[in-house]
Amino acid sequence: MLESSCLRLCPWADTPHSSAGLPTAPCRDIVHGATNSRLGFVYRRPTRLPFLKPIALELYEGDDASYLCSVRRSWCLPFGWRVRDAEDKVVGSISGSWILDAGDRPVAFLRHASAAKVSFCGIDGAEWAELTRQDGGGVFTFTGVPDDNPFLRMLLLAAAVLQADRGP
Image (cartoon, rainbow, N blue to C red; front, side, top):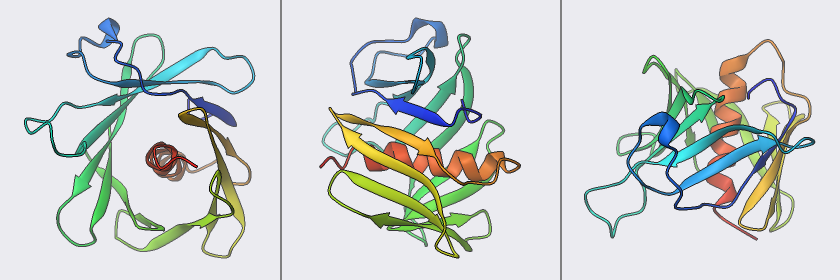
């Protein structure tokens, strides 16, 4: 999934993904931008307090629903969301408009071009990815992110998943 240059984040649906053996909860399919083939999905982990916003999202990829990463609300500094890989190692965090690496150093930031479009830029200002929100989801495109850094791509995808919910 991280190797694809264009991904479509589908709207949330209450469909269980039985292949992953997860309890029924909202899921968002992630499909290839050109072929519409399903590459994975985002699972909104149920909370014990239903009036709270979700505190954990999990990303799965492939037909076998391999666990890719989690995005969990962080209650300590920096406030925002912590991204952990499949081995539960911190990859980085998303705090406001900043994307931070595992050492909490800024690596990218969000630039809101319009209500429907968000650019993900490196510290030097170069655009690495773009999200166009539409129909309860969005189209996420890697435009210039370094291909040799899958953890950076993971962080950008996690930020896109969070941004897609903010809607135009």
